[in-house]
Length: 315
Ligand code: NAP
Image (tube, rainbow, N blue to C red; front, side, top):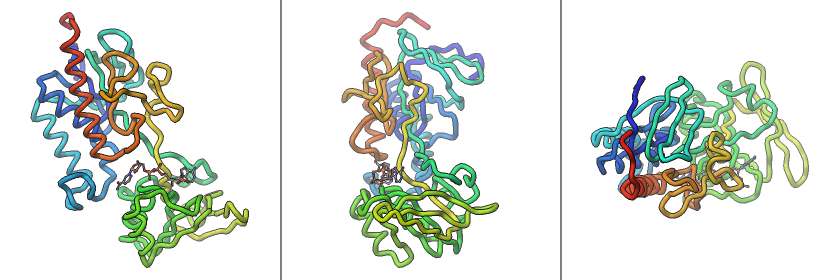
């Protein structure tokens, strides 16, 4: 990619399911398409141990397998992939310019922002200090390190409740710590956790701190109703309290909602002509693989229509 002077039809920034699907649709439409991703493509999908609510799949496929299949499908149609960290973008002109941290510049007529989201931090003492020493944001990545151990899972959404069941494969005991008296997770996911013999729940509780010596050995919980604090022995703490969109770099350029998600219309168009957004980074009701893929397909098609509607000089 070094010295690449191509002006691509489409640059897809971010290689999760939204970006990979945009890549499939754009390259199959014979648009010159470059997917730029700072790590191995797959995004959060790589953290899914099994997939049971993507139509046509029932627990038999891992996130890793599904994202690899999507990437190969896009590359079969001609999509190129570049591993780079983009730290600045000029998006307002007819030709969009992306600046990589390495100093390279890449140009395109359209950009699809499929930047995804990253795990939210709890912000308590010990969280940063014990990262990788008992504190984790990914059950699938780190669960196997905790065979026979006592684990805590923080959160009450789909990820926390679903992953608490996954962690019982390894852990001797899993405690879910939730700040309210009700989970927000889907009913079917809740039922599995609440009926599991080694899962217990600390309702109305928040983590005040995580402690240990070399490795985590306890956390301090506060009951938000009684203000009582307790020290609970644990070997690992999985913080699964939701996501924050990866939009810091585009703040001020692209219209965002109050939580930092990109605002688009139904055709994935942002406030800047030729710039589209897809997947978890977008303001929307439902963040799932299937909705990310749908966004990616629409964004690529809208990018194709935009290119057709404009007169571009050869770049
Ligand atoms: P989420 O739905 O935003 O849930 C976050 C959970 O963490 C909530 O229970 C929230 O509590 C709690 N929380 C947030 N900030 C907190 C803080 N500072 N301290 C303590 N608790 C805090 O996030 P998610 O579970 O990661 O899911 C993200 C998206 O992926 C969702 O759209 C979800 O549906 C989707 N997802 C789907 C599946 C599936 O379909 N199988 C699996 C995983 C994820 P409150 O409830 O009190 O707000």
